[in-house]
Image 1 (cartoon, helix red, strand yellow):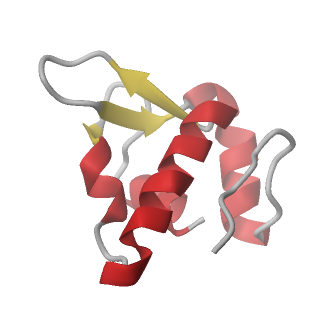
Image 2: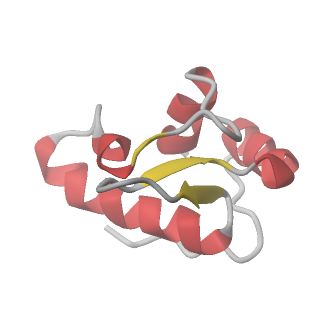
Length: 87
């Protein structure tokens, strides 16, 4: 949820993207691996989409899933199909 909130606040929708490695920014050192795993789960569920890029892996919020993303940010209720990693 924190990852989606941050990307939404930065306007990373559609053509505006960020490096996948940046998803863990703002997380404590012991939570960085969990944040990376959560990023993979968000990609698998389609909430994040991947932009092919030379040498780097870039992601953005999927505009087609905007309703699910906004609901998850506001209520904390995970959309159907999202399997988040356990701590």
